[in-house]
Length: 130
Length: 201
Image 1 (cartoon, each protein chain N blue to C red):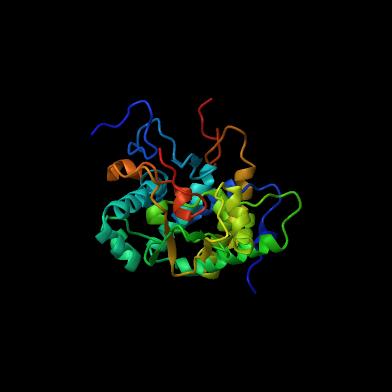
Image 2: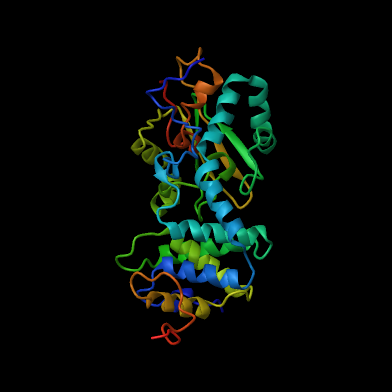
């Protein structure tokens, strides 16, 4: 049996080819990289037994319902925004990471100079010779 | 009282930065390792998707014994093809016929059969689909191009915390001579959620 070469099969098994972006029936699985990160974080935490998926799901349902009950003006629905809030809520509830710590660190990241994507745990230039 | 996450989000802080901050805190505390995170992302980006469910459907179309098993014990029959994992523990397969049309939704969030369909598309997670398909399924299906006669019963399945549904679409007429592999190429994600039919090539 031969498959037509020109008309690529809908279900291309060569999904890991270098030119194949992560797509699911034409749509990107994650619209932005951070969405994939929070998905991966959640699954790794569940996998490692740090949180339970059911607890997370309950929280996700709450966050989605909260958004639907009072959508911020001008803000479109973002599923992964709700997902991130739910994950933070579960981690706070489990005493693993407090929301203030996340806020503090992300605020510090927001102040990073453009073009710098690493944290500055040290001072620059103080022990340079000349 | 639950911590109010909304209030703790500083205006102007993008979720991308919060996600990055969260990840670095989790790593520092040894609560995750980066390799596991990366593996999960990569798996659901590249290896798990509707192609899995399409194989299940094509096998059911060509193997009556398998079809019987699939409708009786979805989890076991799907698992026998190697499709297992989170969100696939309790699979129920519902068959579309000339008189019954099934469509799947999760009204509360986005429960979805990951091992056979991968992660859900954005329209499945959208508040509009989640509420409307329950209230006016025929109108929603018509918008997808799936017009149903009055003699066809519509069944809307709401995924609960336990059960995940997969729709077994009707095999299109004119595909009698096609192989299982070629048939799998016709089966789309939308057909396995139940919003569309499968068309002959």
